Length: 365
Ligand SMILES: [Zn+2]
Image (cartoon, rainbow, N blue to C red):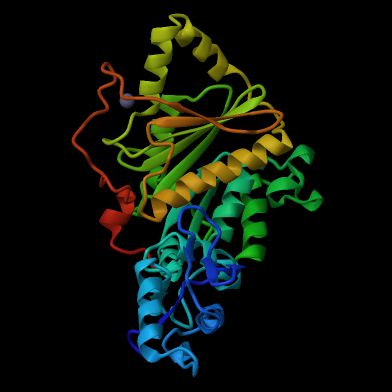
């Protein structure tokens, strides 16, 4: 039935005091209704399904019910009834994510976010514990294609976080992780990675976002080579006892990795030679559990923000996540005047992923 309105899903309806009802608990949108009589209060607390269908109540006059429904409308608590089935690659049809996604949208249409994620493609380069957890999180959240890039073998120290199992030790990380994700979300494509296809000169579309996980220090030249021009990307760097997530770069719009490097050299003139030595160090074999888990979640949140059409918090900023408590600190950055990355804007200021604007849909089959 068109126009059917329901209470925003997952909104708790709570009795605070006689004549006072509270909707929701999140300070961003929770509201209180006061001055209700007992019948109105009882009626409101039972309104959880279709509001107009529930509006029959002998002790609350129709005019008063209509007024209360209007109050709920004004508080953005009523949304269109969602469709029975939505297109998503997320486990369980995305049921676990739907409530939160619906809460964040004015129209409550969390299923549309999931449908868009199902049409999206992300590539992850570097699949230790952190990269594997990130890729698994993206697949769980409903991203339709998760390209996996790391042919190095699964180590004993990779097992656990991020879905590697003891049986995977010695197998190529990208192969073992593809198998694990296939067991979690069979509809997610993990095979031929878009970035590999780009390097091979195939006519595959680039991913919407590429995440590059590195160790010691970011390498702007390597990232540029891996990602290619015009593709949004997120840098993640595992350091001695912390992880840096960011910046998220929408080419042409945001400060890039070279900007960050140039700013650092302004503060520390020796940074270029220090960075060069760091980039030549062998990557460590291990990634600490809590840092890997926390950084993977925050990195996944940046990617999903971009896919969902908002601007990731780490555009023009980095999140530094230190051991042992993993409480992140946001450190801002800006475009460096000597970088020259400020070309004409090639992505939408609303954060719409670059490839999504040009590909016009990346449906499965
Ligand atoms: Zn730059």
